Length: 158
Image 1 (tube, rainbow, N blue to C red):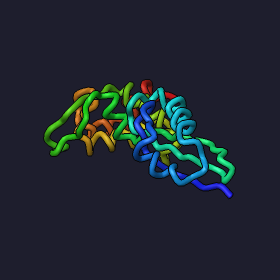
Image 2 (cartoon, rainbow, N blue to C red; image 1 turned 90 degrees about the horizontal axis):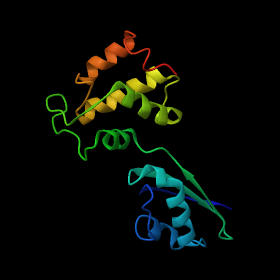
Image 3 (tube, rainbow, N blue to C red; image 1 turned 30 degrees about the vertical axis):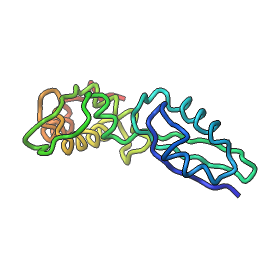
């Protein structure tokens, strides 16, 4: 019978310490092997928090499923800031281009409820609202309306 452990780890930086060590310690898996495999599979995310699911069997066999980081983490990584604005509608902490929004939306598309890139981009824009991030120097709420109006159809063509 298989068991599952779900954790958030920094991409390419997993260690046998918390959060993995305490979760994997009582299991029959080789902790170092799991950590190495997670680091190999998450190296592209370079320090960004990544959801990881480890499924293991009683005989010590394991498999790893790496998810896509949360949208806020992708935005923070792309825009180069650590903390969102305390007053997101008044103070903005960073700016993204519509192309960067589209890149994030493409990464997140399998995990979102959206069926196409423009709708996924609007979900990313919604996260920008809560973080205090402008898009092309414009309030993200205005950008959402511009996406609806088709002003970014060329940039958001799938």
